Image 1: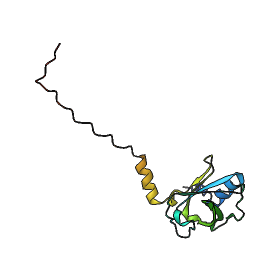
Image 2: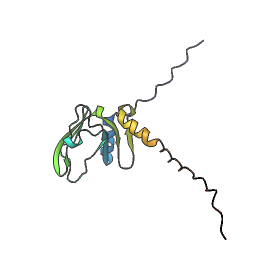
Image 3: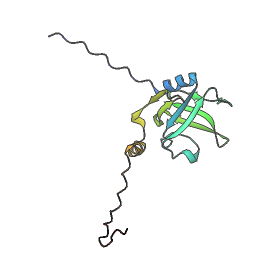
Image 4: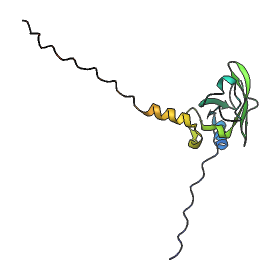
Length: 145
């Protein structure tokens, strides 16, 4: 029996870097990340957020002059509460990158487990409230006309 040709493997998904750069070329990129991940540098009051969203663009006013997207991740000086702060976001902390129209990509394997549990819980419909107990009608009352 002749050997059957091996089917081509599916193309590998685009990298986080490639998706981010493609979105930045078009407009903006909203990066969803786990700020608790090692190597993430954000203001202290955001450092415990498992679903932090940061916006990046080459066209912001004022611009982000030091926006760097490379093999290590994203680095930039952003404004938080009106003050500049130099952020560092390594790629392993990122699990979703999208624009405001919903174009982008998600990396399911990098979504924090506690966030997945929260999503699952919110998808479960709430239990209906128990019906109040029905009171029996008193038998000693009579209809008066």
